[in-house]
Image (cartoon, rainbow, N blue to C red):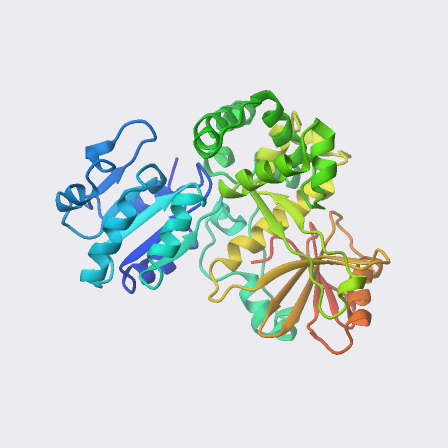
Length: 413
């Protein structure tokens, strides 16, 4: 497969020139190793760790291991399999704060990654790599994306001419394939096999290492149920009851999905009206292709009229915003909003004290009624600085829906 440029490349290069340690984390198969191969010269020293084999005795004698790799930068792939190295890296960096000494990758954000964050505070910077964005899939990575422009000046952005990202596939096929690099280019008849192997590898390697899960069939059902609940508010009691497990177990298993970058929570925005607003987080599966496979959706055509279509599209939009947010420093905080009366805004970004509301609609011709949630938000918080809102949809051009709301193609550049 031909290499596709990643949006994070330039930022990674800048950070390596500034910090002693750069840590790149993300789900399995999102392209972390491929990114390193592309950014660093072919002769760069790189070690890939294994969950079973103690590669070069790194776990047994981490200091000797590092002594045998003196040339910087040292690339350490899948660092979660060699947690003993963390303390040794800290000691080296404390003695020498030169930039660009270590670049680490990991596909878990539990104990090892937490240890890295705590031990290397002030010495390391963390990046999260996701599956492809729309711009990366199309090869149009020549700018920061529409999100940065909207947050910088929403009025100027709304009246601008941003252009569209070229879509290689139809909307249904894009959602069904998902955004993992391999899944975007495989022959369509092999995509289901890819996700079956991906899920099996994920469960047998990552989850087994994280926790003692004895009920593997039940856990597989849990993954399918979680995927079915993407873009919904989370109720742990209900989630557990559906498959006969305790709420505490459901929460723990969902934490495992989050720890392996398969699930993301979006907290509820409360402002000052805490009692009047739902406080439940909204959950999103990381990748729509993974969700379609978990739901046994057989083909892109099967998404037409499918009850999950709206949730899958919202999941894809949230993922796109998450990927573009990773380019910004600081990144905006992402919330969802739902009033006690049922009014809601799908996504609400906060930056510099300003609120940026987003509704997501899987329709080609959004209208003023689709901005009702944004109007309700403004009515509920008249004292907050609420910026012009967006309705993101699979439409072909931008359209003004009201004095402060625009409909915009979800594949805007």
